[in-house]
Image (cartoon, rainbow over all chains, first blue to last red; front, side, top):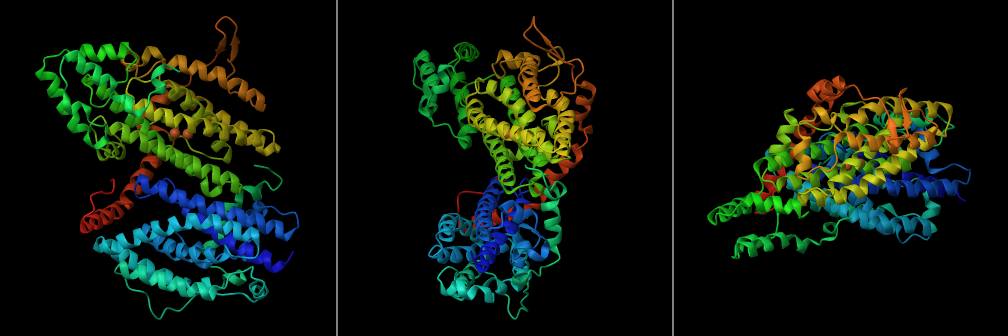
Length: 250
Length: 365
Ligand SMILES: [Fe+2]
Ligand SMILES: [Fe+2]
C-alpha cells in the first residue's frame, strides 16, 4: 500500500489523538458536573476516531506495527497533528475556542472524507460525522454564551480567539504527497473545506459578538513534524509507561 | 429479587394511594409526579395535610417499612431518617466525585489506547453516579449547592479510600478490582434500601460498577501474567490497597454509631462486619487465581464459619484519614475546590446568558 495513504491516515489519527489527550485532561476538573461529563464524552468520541484512523494507518503501512505502536512509540518529530491540537487547555474559553475551530474543521473534513474512494476512510468519517455534529453544537453554544455572557467571559473568549487564530491557516495546507491521493478521490480537497469552515466560523464569531482576529502571522510546521514546545511534554506524559516496559502487554 | 424491584415508575404512587384510602379521603396534591424540584413544596404540603387530619404518620411509616414498601420523597418520614439519608446519600455522591480524581490521575498516562478509552469511560461513569446521587439527595429537600459547599469546606465526608494515592498503573487495576468490588457489596444491598430514589439510583449504578470491577480485574490479569516488573507492580498495588479497601465497610459493628438505625430503617441491610467478611471471602480466591499474595499473615480459612479469618485494618489510621490526615486529603479537596473556583466564571456566564435569553433553565451550580 502507498506511503502517501499511510501519511494521510496517520495525520488524521494524530490530530484526533492529540486533541483527545488534551481534552481528557479536563476529566474530573470541569466547571460543573454535567459539563465535565459532556466534555469527557467528546474526548471519548475523539479518542475512538483516533484509534480507528491509527489502526488503519498501521494496516496500510503493513510493517506489523499496531495502533498502540504508532501512538506510543513515535517521537515528537514523527507526529503530524496540527499545532492547534497540542496547545495547552488554558481556561475553559480557550478549550472551547480550540474546539470550535477543530469541531467545525472536522465536520466539513469528515463530510468530504465520507465520500472518499477509500472505503475504510469513508466508513470512519461517516461514523464520526454524527459525533462531530454534536460537538459543534456543544462548542458553538459555549462560544455564544461566553461572548454574550459576562464581561469577563467575553474577554476570555476574545483572548482565546486572538491567541489561537495563528494556528488556523495550517489546517488547510496540503502536502505535496497528497496530490496523488486527491487525484484518486481518496483524500479531501482542503481548499474547498476552508471556504466552508470560514463561513461557518465567521457566523459563530458574529453570533458570539466577538471580533475575528485580523492581520495575524500564521504559524506552520506540523506537516513536516515541526511542532510547538508543548508536544514534547504531552508525549512524555502519554508515552512513558509503555516505553519503560517495551515488551509488556496491557 | 423482591417484588419491588420490578416496579415501574408509575407504580410509585401506590403506597400513597393506599394511604389515602386509609384516611378515607383523597388528598389531591399527593398525586403530584415526583420531581426533584417540586419536592420541597410537596413535602411541606404533605406534612400539613397529614397534620390536619391528625393521623399517626409514624405508624404509616413503620408499616411501610414492615411491608417492604418504598418510602417516597413526598411521604412523611421521621426527621432522623431524613437526616441520616441526606448524610449517607450525599457522602456517597461526594465519594463518586472525589473518586474521579485518583483514577483520573492516570488518564493521560494509560499505557494503551484501549485502556485509555476504558479508563475515561469509567471515570465518566463515576461522575454520572455522582449526578444520580446528588439528584436523589435533592429529593430530600437539600440543594446541590449546599451539598457541594459542605464538601468544599471540608464539612462533608466522603469515602476514605480516595485519600490514598495512585502511584502506578496497577493502582488503576486494583481500584477497579478491589474498590469497585467493595462498593458493589455495599450497593447491591442498597438497591433494596427503603428510600425509593436512593434504591433506584443504586440499581442503575450497580450495573456499571460490575463492569468497572471486571475491567479492573482485567488490568490486574494482564499485569499478574505479564513481565516480572508488571507482576511486581500488581503485588505492590494489592499490598497498598488491601487494608484501605477493608476500611470502606466502616468501623467494626461494635464501634459503629449509625449502623443500628440504618438497619432498622432498611437504609442498610447488612452490618459493616458482615459485608467485610463477604468481601474477604470473595476476593481471596480472586487474588489466588492471579498468583498474588494478600498481605495478611493471619489469613486462614475457617471451616466452621465457612469464611476466612483475617486481620482487621488499622482503625487508628482509618480515623485519621476520615478526619483529614490521610496521604491525599488535602490534594483531593484542593482539586475539587480549584475546579469549582475555576468554573465560577463559566457558570456565571451561562447564567447571565440564560437570563439575557430569557431561558428558563438555569445551569446547575
Ligand atoms: Fe461509582
Ligand atoms: Fe465504579
